[in-house]
Length: 223
Image (cartoon, rainbow, N blue to C red):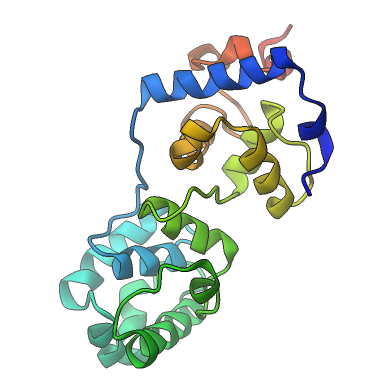
C-alpha cells in the first residue's frame, strides 16, 4: 500500500511531475550509472563496493582490480587477503572484501558463475540489500527500480514527489507517481540531479532546469 501524498495528487500536480521527467529526458535521454563495469558481475561488485563511498573512489579501485580479476572465479582465487589491497582506499573495505569473496563463492557454487537476475536471489547474496539489487536490476534493464540513496531521498522530498521518512517507503511513492514511461531512467535522473545540481547544502537553483516546477525553490532562491 502506498501512503502519504501519493494518494492525493491533483491533476495539476501530476502534470507538474510529468513535466519534470520530460525535461530530465530531454536533457539526458539515456543516463547510466557512473560506476565502471563490463558485465553483470563487475556491476554487482562495483555497487557492493560503492556503499558509503563515492563512485569516483570505487572506479579508481576497480580499474586496478578488474585488470587482474573480473570474474567470480578470479576474485575468489585472490581471497580476502589478495582482494583487500585493491579496495583498501574504499570505506568499510574489510567488510566489503568478505562480502565480495562470499558472494563470488555463492555465484560459482549455486549459479554457475553467473549473477542471478531475480530480486530475491540477489538480495540473498552477502552485502546485497534492496538498494544494491535495485541498482543492478534497473541498470541491466531487468526491471524498473529506484534505489533511494541520500541524493534521491533529498530530491524526492524537495520536489514533493514523496513525503515518507524511510527509503523503502519513498521508493514505493516514487514508483507510484513517476510516469511509467520514465521509470527505467528515473533513478539516474534523480541521482544526477542531486549530485550535481540539487546538492544538500547549497543547491544550484540558478542552473536548475526544473526550478519553475520545484515547490521548494523559494527556500533557496530567497523568495
